[in-house]
Image (cartoon, rainbow, N blue to C red; front, side, top):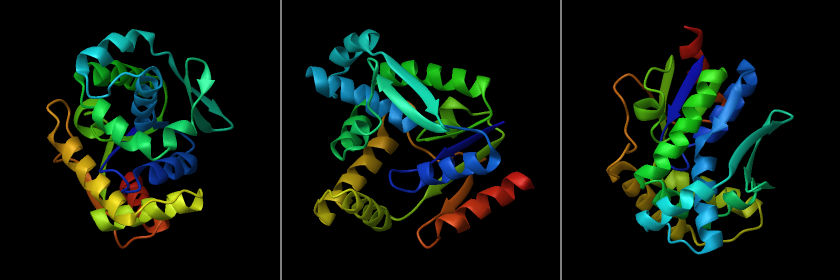
Length: 217
């Protein structure tokens, strides 16, 4: 069984997908973490994430692995657990930029499809319902207003002790929305067969119950 969830940055996709996987006792695959890891590799070795040619040359040297420890996904880059590093704020824009490069998407989509064929799982991202798993049994598009998403991200960073201006966060989210929905290859889009859920005024539990109600039907 595959459950595909798409939506813009900060809409709560990962939170919902993780909890959904727990309740259904299936695997959660955070595809966004994979793009962040490739972007981290580029930043570490000084490759411009917007330079398609340089990124493509780098790809064969990217040793990316995913392991599940006590049910939690850990992402490894060149043998090192980078699960925390890829969540730094700077990685959001870098991941969005590098994900626009077709060679990056092709490499990671192959990995994602292989994992989905092997496990019952929940995948969330930007192009899961439209490109990665167009034949998934259950498809959802989860979103929220840019202001709500920026506030959630602001609170998340504050809880980690990071401070950033709210207006900067909001602008970053709007830019990422534009990048994700306007890239030439596999852009963020809502497919006709995806269930639309606006989480702006919903709690996590309310969203979960709505998703579960469709699956149980």
